[in-house]
Image 1 (cartoon, rainbow, N blue to C red):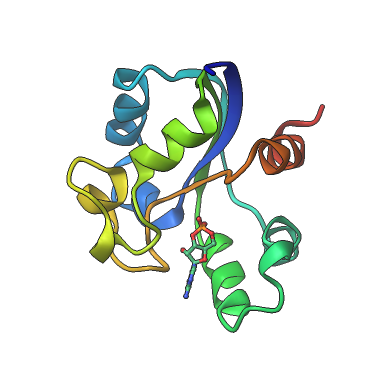
Image 2: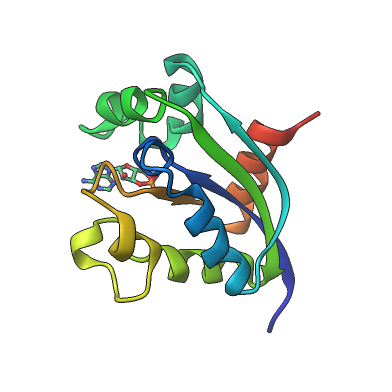
Length: 136
Ligand code: CMP
């Protein structure tokens, strides 16, 4: 069943640093996403730790949080039918080496850490992550 959903996308520091945010936004729009809200920000490490709390037991957690807070990011509220799944498909596999042709991570990702974009993995997490960045 198709339903309109909203999801969070982050264009990560490696992509913003290479001025790829315009091209990545184009890919979202040409794949039927509407950009409802967006802002370019830099977060500090303690905010990155809060955002990635689900990964706190993972060996890569510290490096991941240092990286996300290392430079400007673009955070977006995206909307379309089945947005969660469609965004995950468009991003491609977490590791750019395994990502399918035509996906954002295949095109722009540098490594599993510098994989250019983050997207919510479920409707529940999308609501939590959207609140994290966009709660007024
Ligand atoms: P993201 O979708 O932002 O969610 C968590 C991030 O951890 C992931 O993208 C990767 O960039 C990063 N990461 C680093 N090492 C790993 C790993 N071994 N497995 C999964 N994610 C990893």
